[in-house]
Length: 267
Image (cartoon, rainbow, N blue to C red; front, side):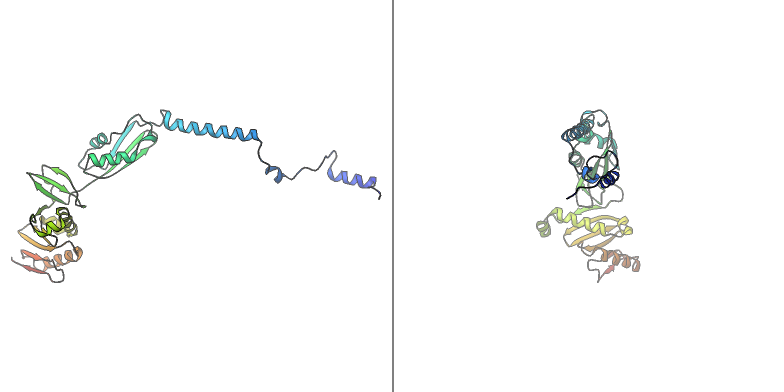
């Protein structure tokens, strides 16, 4: 069989271009080739240097160390008291500060604190965002007053009663209710009642008396009393009491222990 003619060979050479060697592989195939070992080593060294530099910046440099601690949200406490109790290690790496431990320590040292968020403020600060407990009832004890919050927690003893906070009297010292439910349960029941009171009634409430789980009585200003019953159906009792006080403004005693059958008496 005869080989290609001179003309055919020339035509093929024209298509390939002058001086063309063997055809090169397509670009996509060249890109898919694995990198050379030397390239991999260079990339790994660069990544290791970057990681080491990041660790040094966070733990070893002076650029990210604790220099200041601030507290916000205080009401009775002072910012200085909170900062001192937090005992944040000034000068230590900011990244190493144990925020959970500081939060737990603050709640333990300062029971008035209900919650606290410890926030890193890069590059040099720690912020303490405090929420203090608020008293809804107080218990008189030895000439002083123990503050009770909305969760029934007795958290602070003060020498002066906070203004506008009712006094809690537990008169169930030998009752079956106390033996069955315990003092803490009865305190929580009183707190539940205090939280259900309409604003106008809450402002007028001076004493909350608890005889048993289902016998809570309010003493209001103007020598008025309210039989509230248990802490159940608080919203219904609040609406009923407001309507009853409007209907009998001169009454001295109101009974909403059964909100569907209220009663008033006295003048």
